Every structure is written in structure tokens, then in C-alpha cells.
Length: 80
View 1: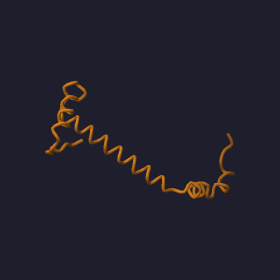
View 2 (view 1 turned 135 degrees about the vertical axis):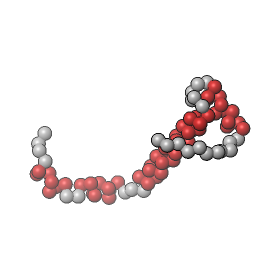
View 3 (view 1 turned 45 degrees about the vertical axis):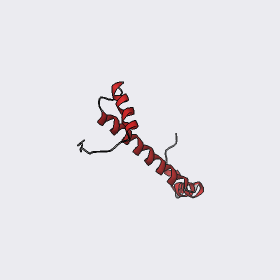
View 4 (view 1 turned 90 degrees about the vertical axis):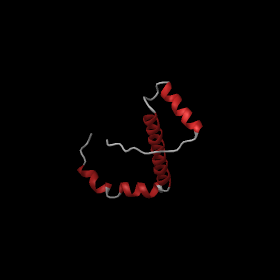
């Protein structure tokens, strides 16, 4: 995947924590440590958004949609 160089300003305390991760060989360099942190946060935000949207669904309505036309198709299904 292509990479783009960006400049960011970080709190000194945060940068020390990132540097500690690099020093402890958790990441090979600052860039990879910060990229991993940003990626992780984006994934958490996306999962949270999905969970929030799912919470809005009405289980009974979803079940009715899933079962719509199911009775007609049952005869065509092979027996197990």
C-alpha cells in the first residue's frame, strides 16, 4: 500500500510513550507505532458505529424480513 508522509504535533508525554514502545522493540520506529495506534483507533470507531447502527434495528422486523417468502422456498430445500 502506498504511504504518504505527514507531519503531526504530539504532546511530549505521548511522544515519550511512543519512543518507549520503539525502544522496547514493540515497533521498529515511530512511524509504525503511530500508524498502528491510528489504525486501531479507526477500527474501534468503525465497530462502535456499526454497533450503534445495529442497536437501532428492530429484531422482530428484521426476523420478519429474513423469513419473508421462506415458506414457499422450504419445499425446494433438500432434506438433511
